[in-house]
Length: 86
Image 1 (spheres, one colour):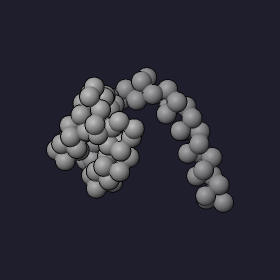
Image 2 (image 1 turned 30 degrees about the vertical axis):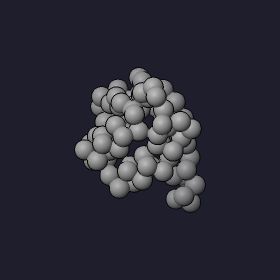
Image 3 (image 1 turned 45 degrees about the horizontal axis):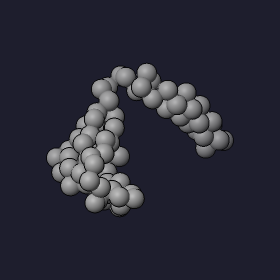
Image 4 (image 1 turned 120 degrees about the vertical axis):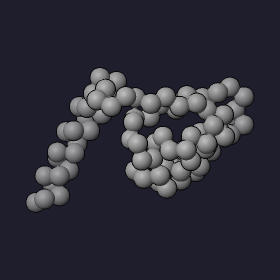
């Protein structure tokens, strides 16, 4: 994901979720540590404008903090690549 795609997702999906923009209580958005898009100044400003704070999952901890990503995503990707290559 690049910065442009992240900004589009934040503006069109995250901030437009029910009560997203006018929510009186802060929301927490948890992201991985992809440097280019997730923690850019532009993304931070958009998240703040949606009355949210963000937390970054440190690198190399995804498999411990996101077990479905580590198990399901790897299997899905392997099957998808095999089907794509044949």
